Length: 158
Image (cartoon, rainbow, N blue to C red; front, side, top):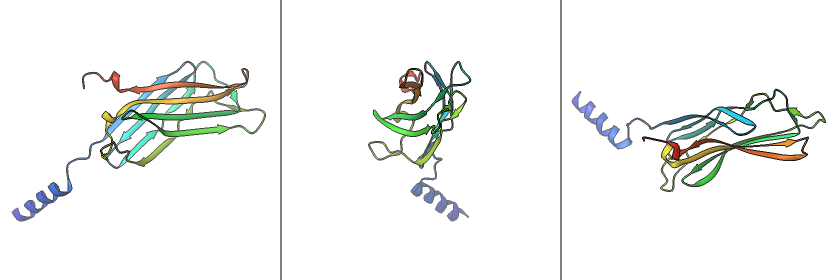
């Protein structure tokens, strides 16, 4: 029995049986016209998952447009990376209503690596933000707003 435990102990040391580090954030943010609730990032040594949030236009239940897009960004080690994106267009003259809650979409990818080739951790993420772009039929131009979700500079006491 001792030999078995010794072999298992050495095996764990060699292959790293220590618990995997996991990082999870759930974020909410606002811009002038938009609000995102529960945008999530989950980081492990094997994967990077982001999304599953809800986006809605503030102050109205109906807003018709011909085009709409969401692009989520994470600044990792001072490099801006698009981590997820979604777009939609209306092909009819009526447009589509974007005022109700919209899903932000979600991604599930392999791990992002830092400059040393190691999987990123929460310490490697400087900022997370979402860009929302839509066609304003009244102004007849594309509108764009940034929703800040996370800023590492705001982390206090860590």
